[in-house]
Image 1 (cartoon, rainbow, N blue to C red):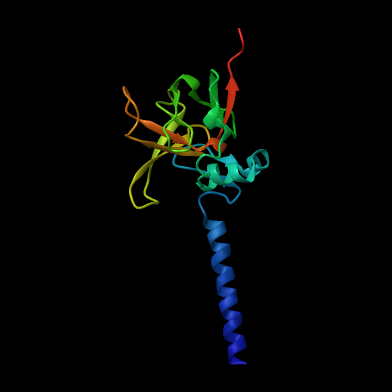
Image 2: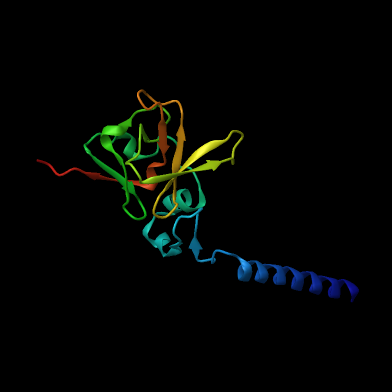
Length: 165
C-alpha cells in the first residue's frame, strides 16, 4: 500500500512540474523564438519536409554531399525554405569541398549570427533574420577577399533562378 501511495505522489508531482513548465514558459509551446527574432507558428512545419524542419527548427544538420544545391550553378538567388527570404546570391557560392553549399557572403541584412557552443569548439551559427531558423554556420577559412565560409544546410534553402534574358 505504501508503495502504491508513493508511486501516485511521484506521478502527480511529475505532472505538476510539466504543467507548471508549460504554463510558465515564456515562449508558448506552439511557437519558436530565437533571441529577438519574431515568433513563428509551428504551422510552418506542414510546409517543410521532416528533414528541413529538423535542420531549421531543431538545429539538426543534413548529411554532407546530400544536397542537390551542391551542384546548382545557374545564376539566381538562394532563399530560405520556410519563408522564401533571399539570403545568398549564386555569384557568392563556391565549392568548399565540405559537402554543404558554401558561400562567401550573405545578402546584406538577411541573416543574424548567434554564438553556438553545442560542440567541442565554439562556432557562429547563421540564422534567418525573419524567423530565426537555423541555416548553418560561418567559419573563417573561406576564400579572399572576405575570408569567410558560410556553410549552409541545403535543405534549409531553395534556389530561384534568375529570369532568362
